Structure formats: structure tokens, C-alpha cells
Length: 324
Image 1 (cartoon, rainbow, N blue to C red):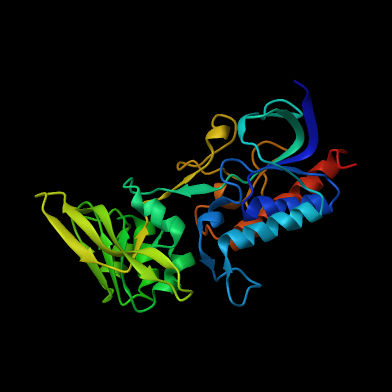
Image 2: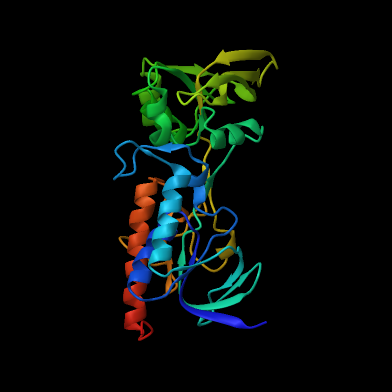
């Protein structure tokens, strides 16, 4: 099997990967980008995106990703519908193995993103993809629940931060936690407990999401959440909580399995980059987007870090005499 060599290989095609491709292709570096198992990243399973600049009426997630895809193709980026299965960052040029071939690269940009952790009941992830009222991102989708009663599952800092943020829009936010004590910091707990719009469902787990068929403004029929069936973790009793939305805030998992033992990661598995840059501990390897960002996790910040990675890679290749 022949090995194909490239100056720049980008792994992942979310906003970070596509933006890195825009910058490296415009720098005449002829990047090749690998789509992986989820071409376009998490935005392809998002319905309406209203917080990405440049779209005054909002834009559908898949449409935004297709626009980015067409843009990088216009600048000459090669897109491969392959999944990278193995990387060797210890040799130069770097060696990558996909499900269809072998590749080497002078520089590698990692934009593999992160995946939300779901509750494991099936319907939560399904309804998040179909716009059925389930989400893993309050900043992305909170606006759609203005004046409605919703629920948040989780008990850590992230869950409380999301819940407090959602009180700006919702009429009431129910925090569902499997224990009778929160894991969040004391300061965050105090803020949540003092918020008049918040209620707490202690010792509860969501066993089932109850839905009903509703008609959208466009006349389409869609399955929407109407209530949660919860089980008490102490006495096993079952109860129902009528809500219009559910936010799952039990964490995200960075897609970094490929790089275990090769790149520095934090305690949660996110890639560590040099502050203010996209540079990892290995010269010539850069990381951008949610794979290295556990704080913001937004499409626009991912795109911004993709720009950084593209520029960092271009400059590094120039310093090494590999840009021509």
C-alpha cells in the first residue's frame, strides 16, 4: 500500500477543522482534512443556530456546516471521507492510518471535538438530534425556552452554571440530581439555592422522556418532550415532571483516544496547548476547538481557535523550511 504525503493533515471537520482548512489552504499549504465518523461535527445534529455571527435570522446547523465545507473546497482543500484510526506522532513526518489508507504529514492539526455525555436512555440523544426539546448546551439553546418550564440533569459546577444561566429565559428550572447533596462548589451552590426560579428534585434519576407530537410553525409534525418520568433513588417511587425542555449537564468527553500516551492531556482528557496558542507539546502538532476547550465549547470559539491553528501551522512550517 502506497503512503500519501501532505504538508498539513487536519483531523475533524467541525467549525475548528474547517476554519483551520480555510487558513492553511489560502496559505497554499494544500491541506487534507479527514471527516471521520461525524462529518461536520456536533453542529450537524443541531437544529437552529442563532448565535453564530453573520446570520441575522439564524441558520440551521447542517446548513452552516455545508457552507463551511463548500468554502474550504473552493480554496482547494482535499476532503477525505475516512476515519483516522491510528497516529504516530513520535516519528517525522508524522504517520497516520485511516480506515482506507496510510498517510504522512509535516504538520497535524487536531480538531476532533468533544461529545456530550448522555443519560443512556436512548431518547435523550435522539430528541437532541431532532429538535425535540433536549439539549446539552444551555448557551446554544436556552433562548428557545423563553417563558417555559424546563429541567437540568446534573449536580456539578457545569450543571449549576447551566441551570442558573437558563433562569434568564425559563419560567422555572428544575435541577434533577441523583443524590441529596450537590457536587458543585459552595459558591455555585449558594447562587443556585438562592435563585427564586430554581427548584430541586433530590434523589431522582430520569427513567423515561415522555413525548407528544406537536406541529411546528412550518406545519411539520415533530416529537417533543412533554414530561419526565423519574425514579426516586432512595425508595424507588415513580413520579412525573411536566417540562418543555431538558438540558443534560453531566459532562463532555473529548475525543482524544487516538492521542493517549502521545500528547499531554488534563485530568479530564482534554488536550493541553501552550497558553495563547494552538501548539501542543509536540512541535508541528496543533489542537483547536472543543478537543482542547472545556470552558466555552461554542461554534464561534472553535472557529477562532481553528484560525489560530491554521496560522500557527503555517508559521511553524515556514520556520522549518517546509512551507514551499
